[in-house]
Length: 82
Image (cartoon, rainbow, N blue to C red; front, top):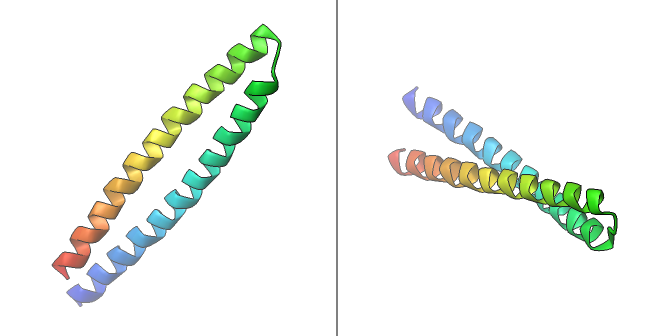
């Protein structure tokens, strides 16, 4: 019964990892889009908005990477303990 519980936790962790990977890909697409828009922007106030968005997306990207690394380590630890 304990093995089933560990397997279930590993499966849940794997699902969370997949979701984070998809969110990371989405964030990276938004970062590329924002960069392209930034390069076409000429109005000063819009340039500031693009820079703000760029910094925000970079912080979110960093958060996702840290979360993904933590979950992957958790999954690895659970796999070793099974």
